[in-house]
Image 1 (cartoon, helix red, strand yellow):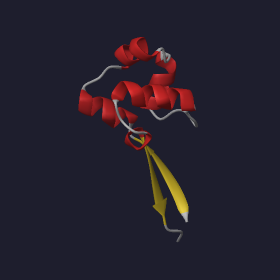
Image 2 (cartoon, rainbow, N blue to C red):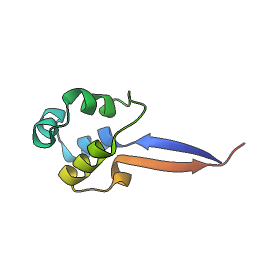
Image 3 (cartoon, one colour):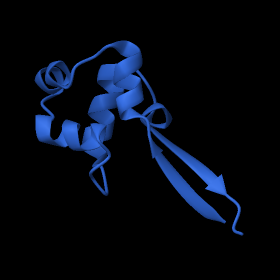
Image 4 (cartoon, rainbow, N blue to C red):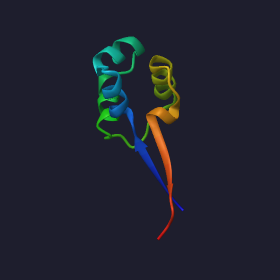
Length: 73
């Protein structure tokens, strides 16, 4: 079984019409970190960043990162 991790951060910001700069100011997360997450450039995300985003966005981790299981071929 393969696991696919889908980054929903960009879609979530679009749905809520939020800006990276506003989130950065409110949470203290650097714009670089948020931009990398937005464009899916990073290979990982820290728990601190996830918790801060979930608190700010009033959502769960699953709203930001979706894990899907794909059957092996």
